[in-house]
Image 1 (cartoon, rainbow, N blue to C red):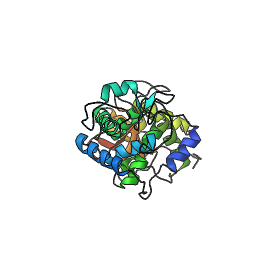
Image 2 (image 1 turned 45 degrees about the vertical axis):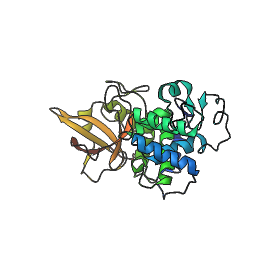
Image 3 (image 1 turned 135 degrees about the vertical axis):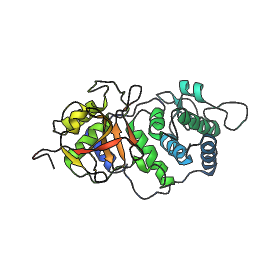
Length: 295
């Protein structure tokens, strides 16, 4: 539901979910009603968005209009969400479109709702930044991952960057990533160390602190702490360093899977997942461990 935070689960449950039922796997066959499938495909084509992502949202919000919850076909649910794509009234007023060209915008009409969802995703960064776009639809990392699990059920080629390794190399890595994932969506603020906002090195420090390891506060000092890891041998939980400056790297992230990281990018942005495979400013990787480090 747009703008509605999902129930926050205990950290242990979030960790299990991230590494279990929401992980990668073989594409599953979800049945989509033919009329909905056609609308997802047409809306995706119009706005340049993968139809599978739209279908993932439709599945998560209303089971493609088949759900029995209040608000899907009439009225609104307790949070004010309406229609098969579960728009809040304020969001619908800003992004609702007449998808089928019948001269009216109807939040309960699948054509209008699906085309409006595509427009909303596009306005929030899709397809270039799918994580951010879906996160705006519902401000929860678990929601983003669930949508992408559904999307990958329709095509295994969609959303591979959102997968999490089923087996992490150490318990330290698991705790570092569990903490980092809990911060997804929180705003960047220079000098911040949480809990409400972070800068890049503040996030890294707190994530390692949660795992029982003390690392320096500042990025260039973190670069000097731990074991340097050759490119291509990085593992989940390692730190990735970027933007070399006179004193050392000026940006740090946490490797989630090889090729992807969680980081706090810059002012005006939020803690989020991102690919680092196409970045030209990667300096290297560091693995921080101590004797008896929970492995």
